[in-house]
Amino acid sequence: MRSKIVAGNWKMNKNLSESIALTREIITNVAGKLAADVRVIIAPTFVSLSDVSKIVKDTNVEVAAQNMHFAENGAFTGEISANMLQDIGISTVILGHSERRAYFGETDELLVKKVNTALKNQLEIIFCFGEELADRKSENYFTIVENQLKNALFHLSEKEWNGIILAYEPVWAIGTGETASPEQAQEMHAFIRKIVAEKYGDNLANSISILYGGSVKPTNAQEIFSKPDVDGGLIGGAALKAEDFTAIIKAI
Ligand code: PEP
Image 1 (cartoon, rainbow, N blue to C red):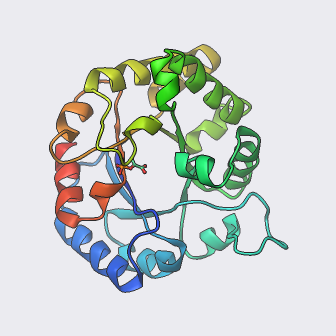
Image 2 (cartoon, rainbow, N blue to C red):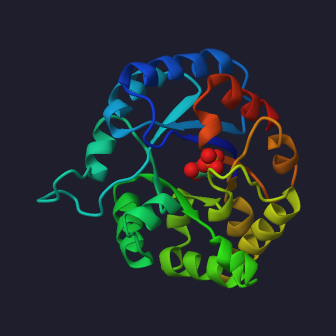
């Protein structure tokens, strides 16, 4: 179902006690204040997931993992499986983040495996994709984005798309302070909805949430979220301060 979503990706920030404190502040700030179609999701590190998952129980804040391995289990030192996430009450996972692609060599082929495993284990996916600065400059960013989506997600059935949230994150805007303009975001989000519609039909395309990510802050969130094809944001830096994250939630 198409919802408005503000998701905070904490990356490799906040130890356990800091994660608990930030979670509690966010819960207090949004308690009783979210419209029925708005979801708030936070994604702490693996170390904090289990505790944070218990703290958000019976609140209107949800928790996601930042990553998972494609295998069900086995000899993959340092990795975490879909079942391990499920077991501690996690039902959403971020996949395909540009930092995973850039620093950990995650390819479209690998992401297909992760996507399949996540869905098989009833995990909802926040799927990240987006062009790099060179692609934006050379003006082939539509092709790059189209290929990323087709390569990783277009083998899925219509039903499987119920478990997909898209997060368009132009790499040049992540953690750089440089934000895509609301018009640039809208242009790409409309394009994404169009290519999903071409493959799966208008109903499905209009039912998916497409988030924007890349230096969203309290000062620019409202303008970006006001665009018709932008259904919310995946927030990095500004998700680490309860005050800023709450202001971004208010903007939606
Ligand atoms: C992100 O990492 O998904 C992100 C959008 O980061 P930031 O908001 O810091 O640009």
